[in-house]
Amino acid sequence: MKKCFLFFALLWFSGLFVFAEDGVLPTATDVSTKKEVPTPLDLIPLERLETLAARNADAQFDPNRVITPPMPIAIRQEGPQGPTYQEGSSYTFLVHSMKFASMCRLGDGRIAMAGTGWTSGANQEERGCFISYSDDEAYTWSQPIQFHRGLERPQPVFLGGSKLLLLPMDDDGFLSFSDDNGVTWKDKHPFPRLPDGRITYHKGSVLVEEDVISAVFYVEGEPRGSVGWSAYSLLRRSRDAGRTWNEGIWLPPEWHTSEGSIARAADGALVVSLRTAQPDKYPSFSDHWRRITTARSMDEGRTWSDHQVHFKYGKVHSDLIRLQDGRLLMTYAARMGELENKIYHGIEAVISRDDGKTWDWSRRFTLFRWAMHQSMHSPCSLQLKDGRILTLFLYHYGAQWGDRSVGGSSRTLGITSAVIWSPDGSAPLAEKN
Image 1 (cartoon, rainbow, N blue to C red):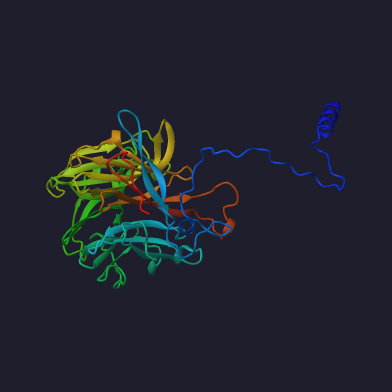
Image 2: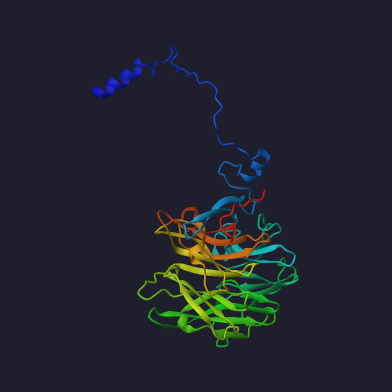
C-alpha cells in the first residue's frame, strides 16, 4: 500500500493528474517540428477504392456482387535450392455456402462455371444449381442463373458450337443438354446405370474428343485386400456426345482406386489420376486418408503402364488438364498436407513434362492454405489465354467448439475461391486493373 501511495503521489506532483479549476483535464500541446520521413503511399484513387472495399459498417459487400475484389496471394513452388514464390491473384465467390464449382470454355471464348449454393432458406433441399459466365478470363463473373433446385452436383461439358452437357458428379444424378451455352436446359434424364443396375459415381475432369466423351467412374462392391477396399474404378465412354453410355472397361481392381480424372497426353496416351486406398497399417478414420495413383494407356484403356502410387496419405480429388505446350497439369486437394514438417490443409498442383510417365513432385506448387478445416475439396483448373491457370476449389468453415446451431444452421458451410497463377514458376505477375 505504501508503495502504491508513493507512486500516485509522484504522478500527482509531476503534473500528470492536475485538474484545472473548473475540473476539466488540461489539453496537451504538440511541440514536434514537421519532418519529411519515408512512409508507405496510398496509391489506389478514391473512385476505385469505393469499388473494391465494402462500404457498410459490417464490411459486407453489395448483395449484387458475385466475387470479392481480386487480391494478391503468394504461390509457393518447391525447388532444389528451397522454395520460391510468385504473386498470383485470388478471390472468393459470395454465393452463400457455394460448393462443387466446375467449368469449361465455350466456343465463343467465354468461361462457363456451374456450382451449387443456398439461394433461400437453410434446408439442403433448397440448395440450387446455377451457372455463371466470365468474358474477361475469370476476373469478373455474371449474375448466377439458377436452373435447378436440389442436391445434384452437375458438371458442364462443352460439346461444340453452343451445346453443353451437364454430367452428374457423385450422386445418382441426371443428364441434361443445352443448345444455348447453358442459358436454358432440356428435360433431365437419369444418368445410365450399369447393366446390373449399379450406380456409377463420378468426380474429376473428363476427356472430350468431338462426339466421344470419356470419364472415370466408380461403383461400390465387395471389400477386398488388406484394407478392405470396396470401390471399383472403370472408364465409361459415350460416342454420341453424351446421350448414351454403353461402352466401358474396368480398371485393374488391384489398384484399389475410386474416382478420378482423365486426359489425353501429347504422345496419344490416356492418362488417369485416381483416388487410392491408404497403405497397409495406416488407419482409415475417413476418406481424407487416401492418396493418388497415376497410370498411362496407349491402347484406349485395355492395358496400362507407368502405374505409380503417390504419397502415403491425405491427397485426393485430382484434376487433369493438358496445357497449351503439351505438359500435363494435375491439381489436387491436400487434406493432410505437409510444409516444413508441419501439417497443413490446402490445394496443390504438379506438372508432368513427359506425358504422365513421371511427375515433377520436387517442384510442386502450393496454391492455397487453410488452417480451420481439412475438407479441401474438388479443385478444377483451366488454362487462360495468356498461359496462366485458373484454379477453382471448395473448402469449409466448420466451428466445432461452442453452440453449432448459432445462426439457425448446424451444418458446415462451404466456401469457393479462385486462384490465378503461372505454371512457369516465380516470375512476377501483373494484376489486371
